[in-house]
Length: 356
Ligand SMILES: Nc1nc2c(ncn2[C@@H]2O[C@H](COP(=O)(O)OP(=O)(O)OP(=O)(O)O)[C@@H](O)[C@H]2O)c(=O)[nH]1
Ligand SMILES: [Mg+2]
Image 1: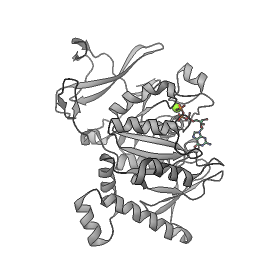
Image 2: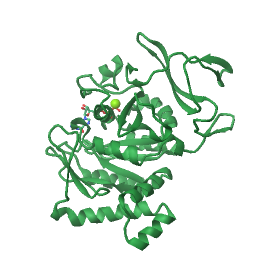
Image 3: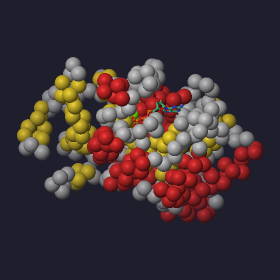
Image 4: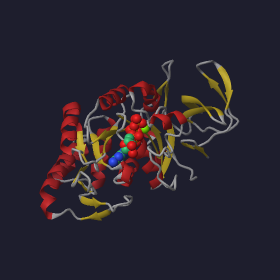
């Protein structure tokens, strides 16, 4: 695997109500990144994320699973979390280490109890969120209702980046108002055709684009001035404003996907790489004794262990995030909870049960 620098790393966690399609979305993200060569699905118990027997028996995620994908020069570390109430414990450590949460909505149900719980947890950790509206291929999917419910819950923070043209069984088109293009997929999903916006849709697309533009500009004085001078911002300037808005949680960019058919997933990943914050852009981490650790490769080696589990044929596995410095196999680190020395043995990069 390529060696990634801090600015090329994105740490995301996927949260939301059970059944929203988090595990299916992650599967498509791994497929698009070339980490898996075939897309599995939850029903046939073949996803990279739900690899535990208990998850396959339930048909739901039970544990928070660590995975990764690679896209356009970025490594996206992913934690897929369980949406069921009983297993909500997995969401907290995932949010504590992620830089961005992907809050997945089921377009059939709109905002569900699990959506609100996930948002409340993200709020506690002050994490930026991206909203991902899924299940748009369902005959009962309802984009307007989902957006109305989200507006009622989240106020005027929704920054619509995409809206679907034909939600329902024939779903395959969105208008992307950041690119000002129409994206259209063939039956196998994957890379979309990028087309001009149809004339009949242009007026509405411009209206939504202008709303996004204003929301992006509001986050920075310089951008605001540019916006007033030029009456416009280019795509890069809008991305800058959107990033600032995400970091202050004053806006939540909204995307459309059909995770099961791999539609919209590449564009979502592109936005994660281009706009979502890298670990170096985050505030320093506060330790339990009130010290602040800056995320800096040149700092002392420090890691935060967020999960341990017993894995079949492997034994105890510890999942951690490197906060500062460089970690190598064979290093001795101090465990500040137990005040004891611990040796780092083998280090793996994981995508569910696959370790490399
Ligand atoms: N038609 C359709 N089905 C989908 C889509 N996304 C997910 N599904 C199906 O919806 C069901 C639930 O999907 P999951 O990916 O397990 O949902 P989840 O959010 O991970 O659920 P939990 O693990 O319980 O939190 C599965 O049967 C998926 O195949 C979609 O975009 N369209
Ligand atoms: Mg799941």
